Length: 164
Image 1 (cartoon, rainbow, N blue to C red):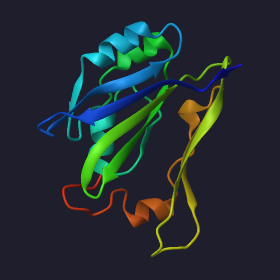
Image 2: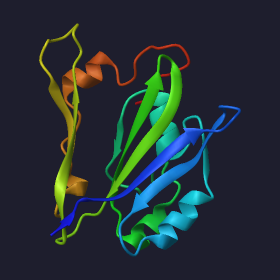
Image 3: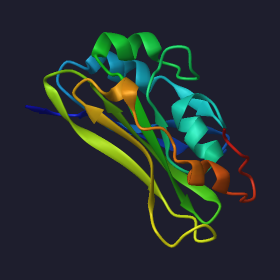
C-alpha cells in the first residue's frame, strides 16, 4: 500500500510579491519529470492551482485537472496524479506560501483528504465542504455543502476576491 499523497509542493511569493515561485517539494518515486516542470513555473494571482488558492484566501480542492485552470494537466496525467489540494498560508493579509498536495487515484494508493469549514454566523459546528478519497473516487468527490457556498467561498478580506 502506498500513500494517497504523492507530491507536496511549496509555492512562495517572489521578492516583488506579484507571483509565486517554486519553493521546494517532496516527490514520490518516478516523478522527477513532474518536478522538473514545476521548478520552472511561476504563478500569478488567481493563476493555476496555487494562484487560485492565493486569490480565494482558503484551501481549494481540484478534483479534475482536464478542462480547468490547472497548468500542468499533461504532466500530471503522465505522472498518475489525478487531483490536488492547495492551502494558502497567510500572516494577516499577507500571503506567506501556498502548500499544494497532489494525489494519485489508483489501486496502489490509498487515503483521503477532507476540507472542513465553520462559519460562526451560520453554526458553531464544523461542516464538511469536500472530501477526496482513493482508490478510484477522486472524480466522485463529495461536493461543497450548501451552507459553505451560502457563507461565501472566499472571505471578504482586503486584496482577496470571491472564488466561485
